[in-house]
Length: 530
Image (tube, rainbow, N blue to C red; front, side, top):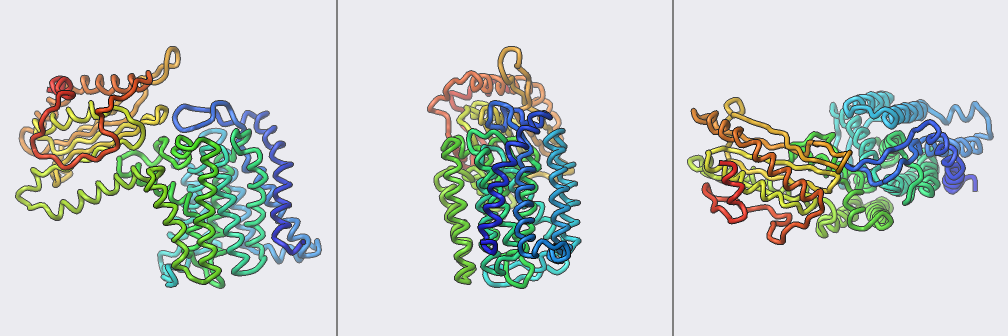
């Protein structure tokens, strides 16, 4: 029994069952709780944080029991087993826990948290945990001078991937169980029951015990301390557990980490292509869209099924020594999520629109590239009638010879996200562009909690000709009318008014000619902009 992986798993499980209520009580006593908000959090009452502390100590207890049994409870033998890399991992896990607790308690700025993560990741890499090469479908690609930066980047991705998923009851915990359990099996297959596998099994058991209190409706959360600590440990173990006798990251560990990596990639893509800050709050994460479609309990079943498919196929690829099989499960999950428009569909549309624009810029003749226009309009969330604001803007841009108009709307508390862009295939050089960016606002809340909140921005670019300043001047004269239109649409959404069936839904409009025919629904707004 003691030589079985069940020991660390069960020991961590029972330790978590006992420790979590204690940590929860302390967190409530010191007011370390997660307050609900309307923008990105799904719970409606304060929930205790610091669940990651219970997971951390439960994991340590299980590892300590296993080491004690293996070494006959002698200090000298135990110290020989805990090599430098393990002591560095222990210190780094404690450091990331402290950073996470500070963030949970005082809400650190994104750049402050990122700086701390970079320092911790560099310490780990500096101690010798380095990706010397990357395994790609049976081929090893040496990283050379890029080994250190790629290693640090991988750890940062792992830390933040789990952190981004921790926004719904049981979400990050469920993913963590499958990821740590799969890495444990992978390590067991490659190296036997070493300390690597024991740590992964112990982490899996601790998360299973924590899930009892974290499943919907949750009474305690992992917090940033827990999610970042789990991401760090998983990131390091994936580097250690990948393949026999070599330090590399292969297709199997990446497939096992597929779901958190997908959510992180989608968030970065969504914010980059819409021009938003990487730290922008939105409700486009995997847990938000799954919760909206399947409910809280259904969300966890969907996540568990997706993790089970990608992890099982990845482990099978290692068992049969056929790396080409590893990404099959992940690709199947991706195709299902995108194909059913459950997750990732809007990001794919954004990426496709940008790709088409780039391709078209190579195909259009130089003589006509300034007259050719490209347009994309995408409802990423919600069904708000934002076309009532957007269509008059296109007409105004064409009548006044503007070269680019972009609008981006983000109202997380109403699940509304809209992005549209209209631009010439070739823009003037940046140094000669006349650019105006205007923040857009809307009233949020009702009665005494009502506030004028920023919900997006509008960007207008005029060319470098002599009349461009006059063109922008005409637009600025009517900016107040535009703001009124935005507030009108937002107020109707706040009041729960239904959108007319005539409004386009999640469609990307085709490229339009230099002159567009006005529609009846847009005539009033067009005249107000003139």
